[in-house]
Picture 1 (cartoon, rainbow, N blue to C red):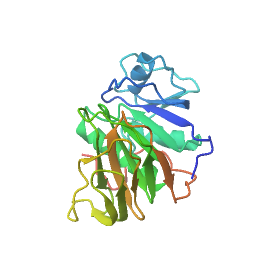
Picture 2: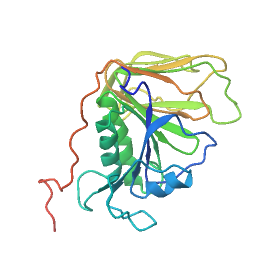
Picture 3: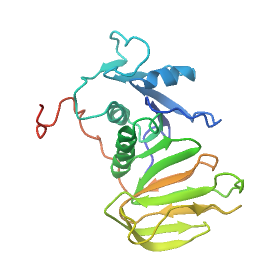
Picture 4: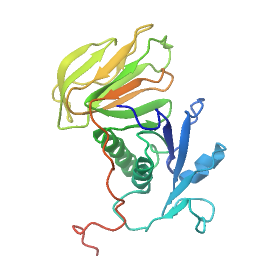
Length: 250
């Protein structure tokens, strides 16, 4: 699967911790800020194409209208980040790099991890940028890392977790610990994928036949090639701008 923008990346900025990893931002054609993420984007000299949110975390006064401002209610089911990803998807993007999606409130971090799993299950790819570490999710597909020479004195581990109740046909190739046609589950009762290691000058591959995997790896590693057997869906669903009917408001 390749996205209709020829692999172009949508950059999304959230209001969480911003980590300086000494890396250039990837090639992109669309920048979306979720609320206070606009402050972070502008600190990097990037003016967002779209700013979405209820504007409870932006430091400057919220913009007063304009075609690139999408104002959301404070009480709603979607987080500002989820809304930003849905809008990027509606613009045709299937690859997302997310800054400010980790750190800060742990509930928001967990929601953002769930969001990249949603992207994967709809045929897309999201990367959450952390402190020298990237976290992504793949569904019925693979990540292939080119051979490289990691600095063994610094971070060179890669970890794999099942984000599904069961993930089948899990493979880890070209790493210190190999795995073939394995089964993983969310509570790691079938073994752990934590802290595997890249090997010098060896390509590496993570794959899953059925299910969703979370993969963390050092951002110093070369960007992996991604593939999935899923066809991208037309939509991630409509924006949820109201509270669920299942909730009772006190």
